[in-house]
Length: 195
Image (cartoon, rainbow, N blue to C red; front, side, top):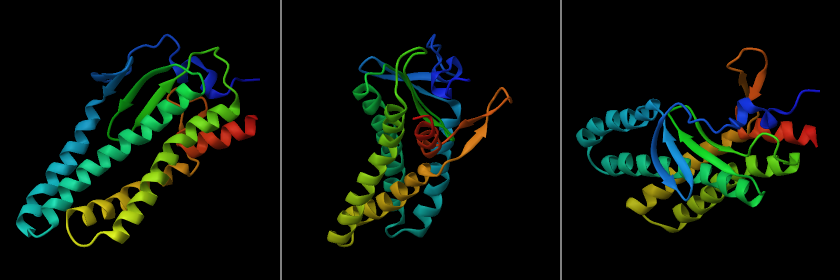
């Protein structure tokens, strides 16, 4: 019987090789990498600035707040996975961010990790998005016009979209021989089936 993908060397990089990307920071003992594609986020925000300045009003504040809230939500989502992995007794090897990927690489091949722990670690990121979404809904309801109101509105949008990560989706394996989980929802489903 094949090992679940989270036990295979391909997933964990048990030799903890540096991922494709540039090391940009270290939090605790965990290195943080950014792929070149992360510049796509900067490009997206840069493209939004000229129309914002032309339109005026609250739109420039919206663009700035959108950029900050999006990056914060992404980082906090991945931090949720890292904290949950540490709580489950797993080693956090590194975190990586790019335009189409953000991930925390945790554990070592051969480490014991029950399927329920894997489900817990996978659910932690969307759990953070859900908490931020609820705070944003409450904040939006109690604030009037202004930057805080815009920030809470953007928070609802960004973290609501973050919850879409619970939809199970499998992308083709880079080796082409089988499919691997690509969303937290797919990891949760796989772990529940393995339990």
